[in-house]
Image 1 (cartoon, rainbow, N blue to C red):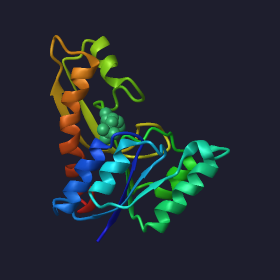
Image 2: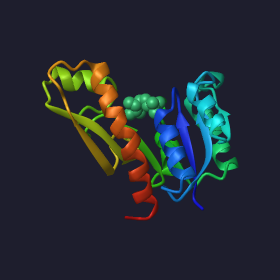
Image 3: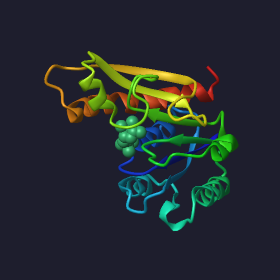
Image 4: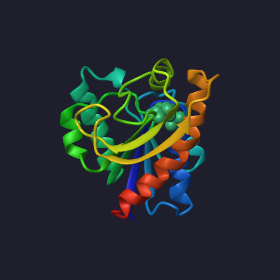
Length: 189
Ligand code: GRF
């Protein structure tokens, strides 16, 4: 069975959706590891409660990005990961690390890519007066938020939306999109 490692930095709500989808058999893979760069990430507790092995590679403990990524790679390899899902992971990965996993590393981004790469996506959509927003699952390449798109989900922007209310609406779709996109990716469709 394909072994999936999930990288988080915070609450890990997408991680929970992915783990539950694998544990229920909806996604034909095993959750091999949940790894965070932040030892205080709330998602680590949730992963442990779901019975998934966890690890921390604290980026602040390393002198530079390559050293951090070597430690990251070692944990992923030790866990026997075949595929990586970035899920609220807030570290930018160097081309060197991406090259080692390209084609088997996915990410979810809270906008309708290619619009709004980077941060503060919901506020930017509101500021632009967009009438719809959403999220995208894509393969990770060296360019930020730029790889081949595996799936998208759309939501309406409502007149009284704030970045927070829009983010909450998009997040509901993220939790459905990511497992579906991972399932399709794994069965090659
Ligand atoms: C979500 O908006 C996700 O799209 C982005 O990080 C946010 C938090 O995700 N990548 P999670 O709740 O930690 O999964």
